[in-house]
Image (cartoon, rainbow, N blue to C red; front, side):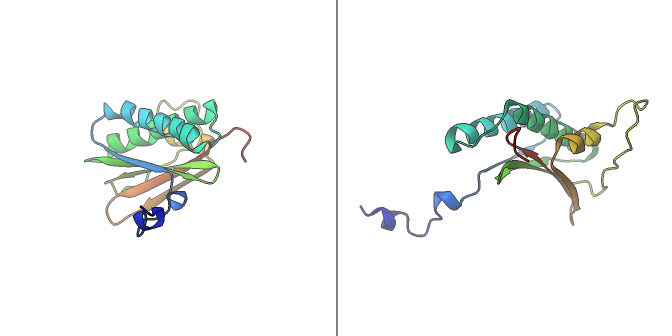
Length: 149
């Protein structure tokens, strides 16, 4: 069979994004979200041969944990996690149903708790919040390799 004919109408593999998505409902699934992020990056390294540092895996797990924890804590219903490789970074997007935008506090060593977004912003290359008709999306990107800028 002709390979071109067999693949007619399908997008080429090289043009497909390297991405993964999942919905999370309960607080116990925060660990599953971290595991998904780690497994995604390990597969990116193994299957796509992109450099992914151990530090990057840890930072992505941290960002996913903080964002999914906040979504589960402050928004009713499920949250959605999207991971996508864009150039030399992984873009992490968490959607939740609460339209209230998060408040980023100034650094304060005396404050107990509510340091999650400070941490996310400190380890991420980019951070942004998009208000949507239903809920909001928080997006952060983390470089894949330590020497990437």
